[in-house]
Image (cartoon, rainbow, N blue to C red; front, side):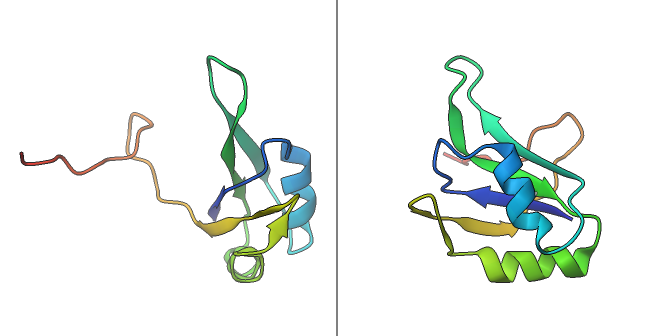
Length: 93
């Protein structure tokens, strides 16, 4: 299961996500997202866990927890469409 983590302190590294979520089970990958131009963290990332039960337990336990001074948001990530971008509804006006 792919997990979305938001409101991260800009200093949090992928290894820290790996460590935190690893307490709940196997972590396939942990990635912080960086701005291409500034190379600065965007304050969110993704963790992939192969066992859905472990992932759901991590989501439930970690959502709202404070890490490095920020209360993080943890939820199941939305799946991406082909082409790599999430589909956004178009405004009719």
